Length: 167
Image (cartoon, rainbow, N blue to C red; front, side, top):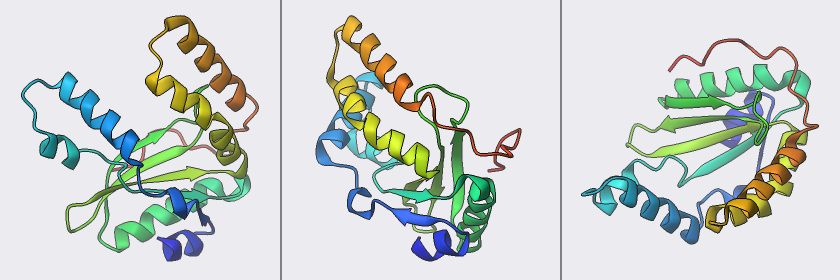
């Protein structure tokens, strides 16, 4: 992953948190089991795309070229893009997240950030963590507002493409 990121002009960051923590995994599996009566935990686990999550940071001026080149490099290594979500036009998270499938059948996520969006994501993390466990509607609205304020001034990298990433 480091070679793909660097060859594309990006930096691989946050390797110490590339594995989903056990509490987050438990919450995600429990939520999916509740939402899908009759599902088995093993089935749910195989569909979780961010058990392994990489973050690549690119300067805004080079961002879209870095995204394209990284995806091309991973495809050249027999990785397949199964999903991509561009959230640069949203108010509560700004990045492009892509899910890849290895030839061995393992899903992993790559989050593409600018330095500014990565900083905002780090500052918003406590709000996201509280949001995952808070049921009080008023508090949830407050948390969403805080997250929105955190990302409000994060600029969209120039040259944002229209359309979607071909899968």
